[in-house]
Length: 280
Image (cartoon, rainbow, N blue to C red; front, side, top):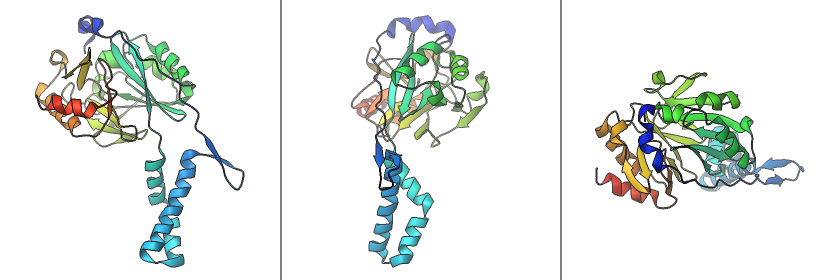
């Protein structure tokens, strides 16, 4: 939403969620008394399981085990898909706009940066997760409107290692102190799937965590006062395209949804979005 019209929405965004810290990931002590993480342990287990499956299915014997154990890419990809933890979404309220700190293990991706002069709020939320700014590796911008990129400079100044991502069509409208990497439909960042949801802006994107069944909507929809609706027409570049994006989101599988404007839906979010899509 352009900043000159922000006051229209101020009254709708005062309620917050209490973010809770994430627990440290348990280690595993193997025969070599070497502590490894849960993901590494699962990777080894999956690799071995794949080798057993190859032998039992195809009877390749020692050759089969060699093929299975040597196929590092396949084993690693399978392990990564199964071993990844769901992200925990911590809400950052910047007056009437929501941004999100997504925590996975000891790493963080931030989605949107809210209104200007709110960098300290992100630091406070990150601290509640028991982490620091050095854990932030990614800043994903759902779109270029100033109420979603306003604190980008402060966030990037503190998160010195963070890469920045946005939809290609929106990048020319974003003034960033760091190069922005274009992302499109189906791309992956931090284990998150990028969903192209144009309409609100030409390059608007949403973000899906398949493991945690969580959709970060951006402004493709709103849920102000728990009243789910499509993209706000007052600030939407192409309403017909925005409606098609809602229908696209309705075809995805997710249990929870969080929004740039309004309250989260903790359960049954996909059902609610499907009902909305049916009215558009």
